[in-house]
Length: 253
Image 1 (cartoon, one colour):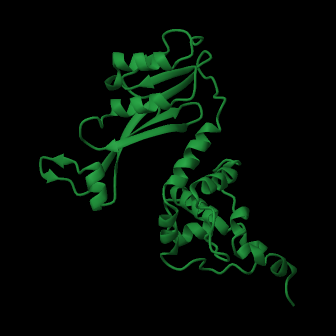
Image 2 (cartoon, rainbow, N blue to C red; image 1 turned 90 degrees about the vertical axis):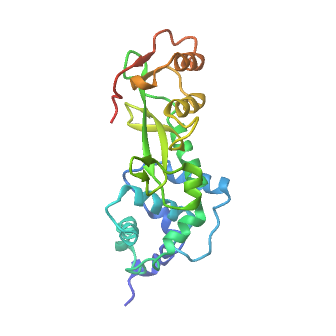
Image 3 (spheres, rainbow, N blue to C red; image 1 turned 135 degrees about the horizontal axis):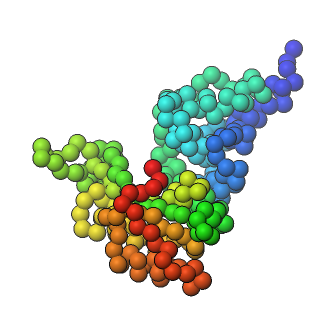
């Protein structure tokens, strides 16, 4: 005898499965932002009947970032683990080996760039954690890139006393909203070369800051009169004076 749950849930095996996947660590408006970003990037369409719809691929990539301890197949199973009780149609192995990697490459990075900026813009009202101001911090890092010819030309390879490094690296700087523990913006460039230092990356972020009433915390090495002037130009005239606070260490880690 066929189960009523099996008959009524066959559609979840295909494109509709992405609408049922829920990641508790991510915010509620995420799926609508994903769909909007896919439409704007021209990536919303997919082959009928495949489980790897564009929305599901985005959720899978986010799942890979959250569950870095799991392999690609294990992350897919983690995403649908709450759905298996609804249907007997889901196979144990959801996709063939390498399929998710190819789908991820076809999707490209522009979709994720749009998702990032839309999710940051979602926080229009920031919590005030210091005398009516919202504390934010600049912090920099470097990251190792895949060893490709394009990455070496774009980002460069660091040098040491023993010679050239093994992998290309990029330099990145982030603006962090401290009470939310949220990355509000990121600027990145080549690891070395003129105009690629953290101060230049910070100026790029300052030009894009959409918020007022911010208290800036930054490393002592980032302090400069040029920075103070840039922040002064970005502030509302109602904010007041002395809102740039320089520390020897970044308070957010």
